Image 1 (cartoon, rainbow, N blue to C red):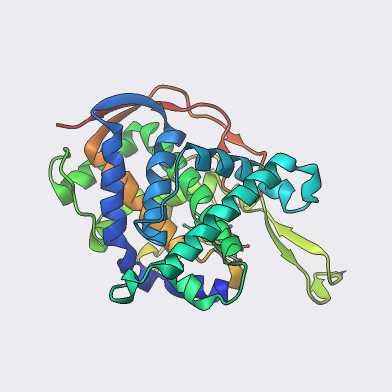
Image 2 (cartoon, helix red, strand yellow; image 1 turned 90 degrees about the vertical axis):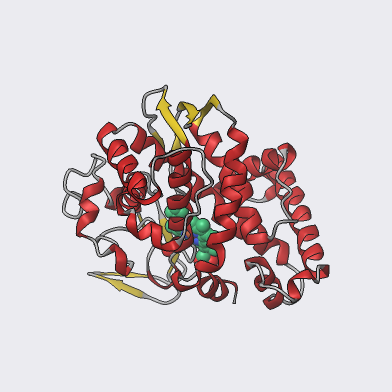
Length: 344
Ligand code: HEM
């Protein structure tokens, strides 16, 4: 039920219901950067994306993101893979943060159910989830959705910006494209609508290419019945694993796989929502990521707004990808500071 609802609500034809709010939220949180400064690019992206996406999906009044929330969420995220496999007894800190977060989401669920203001207007994604989930356990779904909607998208936006800024010719071409759609870049609160995204395909190519290189190490499935693969039979209960990270480094599908080459995506029918063969960053089959169109839209929008409003310079070399967590987009393995200055 939860998965089906996500697929319906986050389908590409439904995205228009989020875009106006998301654009406003991005502008509001980008304002906090001020006139100029230096910050780690990962933190910069997270501080804008997390509250903006939370307010878009959960509703404006339900955004508990503060330092305490961030601390517990970071703990929860760091232990996520081990935590879902081991008894919580061995991971006291992780279990403490998980309980703390579940209590927050339980309260959000109760408040949203009490809040009648949406009855006259349009519902948020979470209101749809809560209307369809009966009984207890809503907080678990809300936490899972919050985790799934944040961690990969934040890392994906980080790598996209880092690759653009470290490739001067790509950065220059993107700024020319942005200029041709919105006029000379500056501090205006540009309204980014769905049609604009289609006019800026190079940014989408950069997002897909950055995600190709930073893709998760594994996507896992459990065999429910005996499964024949070539000469082998996989017994029920066994796990099968595919690695997007390594598949994306196979030169048969992606020539010169280690190089950031956004133009390889010119061959893909992106307007028809098709990816290149062998692209598995969102998983595969019936259970692939239901948030993929939302993720591409939010990253596209954020990159446009940030690059339109600010001039960025990378202060550190491109970090390597950390391979510590297998089931998520890689995180940077070191700092990556940027200097930013608001355009006049
Ligand atoms: C760049 C961003 C993202 C990437 C790379 C990504 C990738 C993935 C992958 C690899 C899976 C597992 C799929 C499989 O097993 O085949 C997944 C699952 C999921 N994703 Fe995403 N995701 C992203 C953003 C999002 C966003 C923004 C949302 C929600 C708004 C979302 C919601 C979900 C949910 C709910 C699941 C679990 C589906 C299930 O129950 O099986 N994702 N994602």
